[in-house]
Length: 249
Image (cartoon, rainbow, N blue to C red; front, side):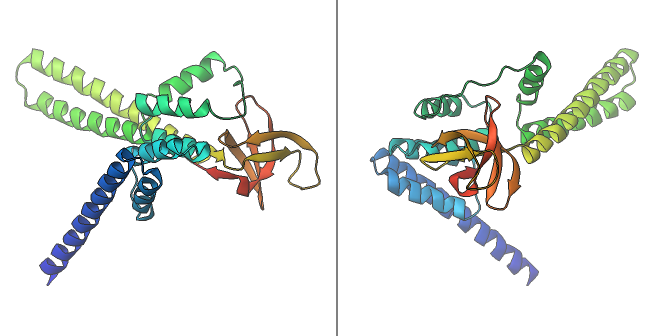
């Protein structure tokens, strides 16, 4: 009975993935035929099932860009970039879509240490650092075993050195994975979906308007208050805007 239950679970899992593959392929065909709305429907149905990937988000971004919906396009490119931060196609298409936004925001200059930190942590995603940590641990174990089994002094020295290097790599990668995870958890970003949204000094409709943001602009959420969120943009300006006017990445 247990074997039958396991087989049934495996079959259901396999059937679900086969269906998602079919939906993805259907979306690709719709996209090639210029039926971008139907492609979006097919791909978003995969998201509704709980599955996601950089390729899926990337294709959704492309489809929304084709129907000139820039905010959803940027949103999905950003989602794809979270999973594959070094993909050149994602970066290129994201930059292209951002050129169609209304707001021209000049990022505030970063200091040397901040720039170095961002460049270093951005080498891999959280998953990438975690995989590197596991790989380093496996290599450490292999070289450590080699050290004990080796009889020649030269081989022992080599094994000891390689095991030490592997341990250092594993430790550093593990630290970077934790830091990356913390950044992803604490740094909340969103895309403005409203055609135009007023950013105010306080989370009140009657408070003074500081500036306006438009569809497609990326913001960082720093606080929430009921139906309002406090945001900061790349040039350092900040204020409160209605939560309904943006979609968190």
